[in-house]
Length: 375
Image 1: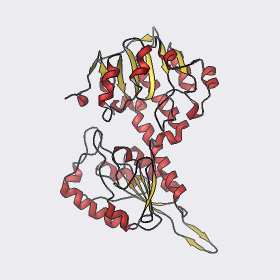
Image 2: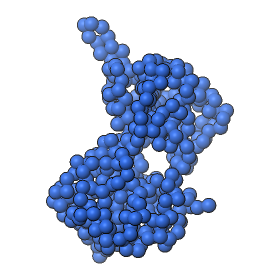
Image 3: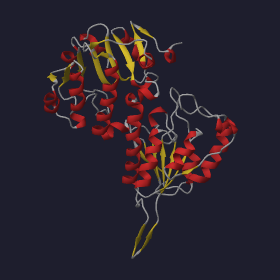
Image 4: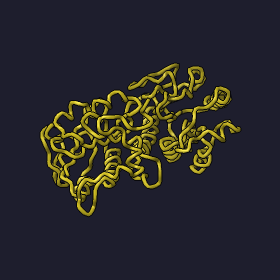
């Protein structure tokens, strides 16, 4: 059983799909590991560290994928990368199945595709949940980015010259990224509030010491899917919530936007009119910018200023903290691969009927098979 790991080629991507630790554990499962030279450069992992863990460093992608049974990747590889791969190779990675659905068909002609985004959110699969591991770090980094751009201190400081008031931070979305943003802002000494349309989020927000901001009515109490995602809200509810947020945001120094709905454009939560009411020097960090943004003034890949308010639209925020995000993501992959291996014979033996395998499987035998991508 051969596993290949390539150097990522997409812009703004510094992560790598393996770590020296996971290489050792994959070898213990019975695999040989081929890693393209320079694959870990963006994550500060030299080739020598992978070699020391037992991997073989190869000159290029073609050599890595040759005869590979599994290709571990961060982002979706181009079809050309698979030209040298054997038919039926398993490609496992963050494939952006909604945004890049059309690009999956050429890959499916050669490979079975597993999207880490589709790993079911069940207790048995928690250690494989790449969306959560990456969002956790993105939420942390968003607050650090905001603090670095903010022209004031975050905590309250009492000095002989006077008192510095603490910063006020409002977090939009209390999923994994939002909760980590709350915790990070609190650790930095800010006064934190948060908003979300999912009923379960209220208790989570308050458990972290933040104030929950939302219109709590009958629609709010039903605003969560069985998988734990937010449902699209009615125009009537959105209007009421927007009015509450419009009053709240005037008092804030920093807004962290993390609200996403899978397969849909990100909801607009901070309007242009709201931005106009924010204090000069305020910061908005829009983690949803790659799906349209929670603020229409955010610019993908740019930091812009509008009426004295700085809007940060960094792309691929987990990659901005590449060492830790790579290590966590590599463990997510390791845990999924472990499910695909027969431990007694140390050979690849995919349990196609397993609910995790079926949930993550996007394409097999040349066809897109995931129900959310059909039709």
